[in-house]
Length: 104
Image (cartoon, rainbow, N blue to C red; front, side):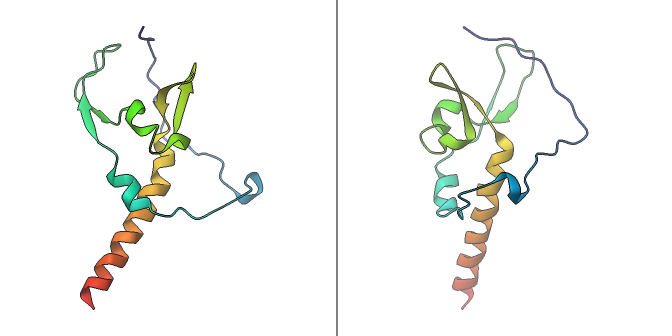
């Protein structure tokens, strides 16, 4: 059963992110290993005419990063791609440190 969705177009999207809204703040560790477990894919959508889309598969991401997956009736349904950026940032930092260590 596939749900028809609508496109959302915006010039910018800003998510509130100030510390006042947060608690239990912890650094992301092992980001590179986590990112390396994800599989980027291209695909054609069944519920629209969009062809050659790029993304991830929610069912594959859920066991790795459940905190960026939305669930419906207990099953993975969507991915909050903006939340992936924090992992990507930390993965780049880990790569930078690995390069720095190799140059020594």
